[in-house]
Length: 396
Ligand SMILES: [Zn+2]
Image (cartoon, rainbow, N blue to C red; front, side, top):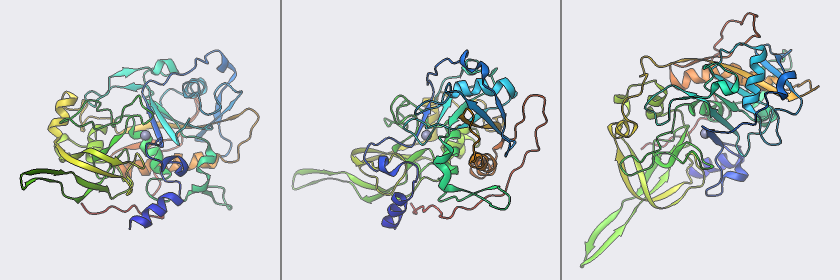
């Protein structure tokens, strides 16, 4: 099973560039930024505007004159300001395509948070990017070309369709970026174990690989114990051999702790979980992959321990939390370009409402947009598309 899985992972672009990510400690596929600094382009964007894509009216096209598209990144804050020049300020998230996402496959940058006790501060920098306290964050979704192998186009009607391979690619990527609004900001140790990776490191805020969470879409692993630890005295000699563990799953969906932080379930529905305190390890990828191994001991973390570190229950709680989100899908292209691959952006836009509903049960994302003064088309949730390959989760 493991060789099948690893063959699968390395012959397909799973969560990251395989060339980059099979090396220990290599850069993970995503960055969640809390304090990314954007170049101020207020004056330069005066002549830029967003307009309806001629092919897909719910995608906004911005023709850029070199102000927004950088060599290996997009000025997302500038994109937001251009968007608000012609579209209303009613979106919680913006998904922007058209330039590489630095060293990542995609990344999310949160600029506003009003949720208390999830490990990150209440803050609002939305005004710096042209929103009046509405926008929560934006994602650089890379170039449309990045996703070309996974999105087809019906030659008869020109409509996009997905070729989802595994749950986690490509729709899992955008789901993961949305998760960055709330998940994996618990930056103080719980029972002596760090649960998340350093937001200021290249790994950004994700569950630490040693967290035994079944393999969250926000990383961590499903650690199966392979050999028990030995701590005994034989013939007067004290012998300590650490237990060994192997990761036995690929990233799945949101875990109970993820859903608690997102405001979906109450804290008493989050089961105890374990963290491996590793004395040695081979972490081949930052997300769950059945090549990751570790040796050491395990500590148990109870939700009460997590709440103690977080300073109490989430506010607002799962009953009064926000569950309906409005998003815009924006394609930034060089000036004079008439893109013929907007259908790829449209695929993500159409598919994310059902994907998010499937992964959370209660979230909805409204992705229909229209310029100021124009009517928005009715919200549509399309049926779930089954991936070609189902993820394998080994029994615990
Ligand atoms: Zn991420």
